Image 1: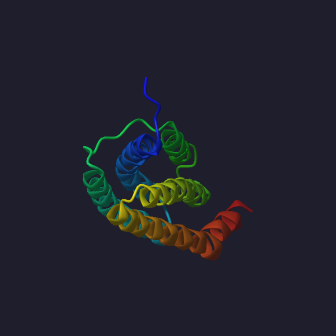
Image 2 (image 1 turned 90 degrees about the vertical axis):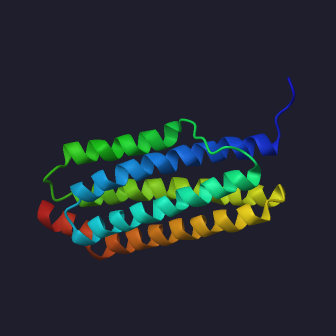
Length: 166
């Protein structure tokens, strides 16, 4: 059996994030529906639109890499999404639901940023310059979403959950 190299690892992680983005795309409308804070609901809806673009960029990366766009089950994202679904069920109608959903969304963002950062670095090492640009665009977008979620948590969502819980 031939040893696997960086190209194989890149392809494997590309399949992982492709699966994750598709799963996230299906989950975001549920999170938006469960959110009580209008700004959080809008943030989930905006990220849904962005995720569609991110999937398109991933398909372009696959094309540059010379492979067909396919995903492979990603237990990490499945676990994070499962946690979000538990929050939707267990905290429905609770003043803390938005804080829980926002925390789940940030866990997703951090996972995505880790994956896109690694893929961008490896694409550069593999000489896939056009892929680097596409992956960096998504990485920047994920970072912006994370910052927006942090601001929303700090300015309203967490405080609202505290006030109502007291």
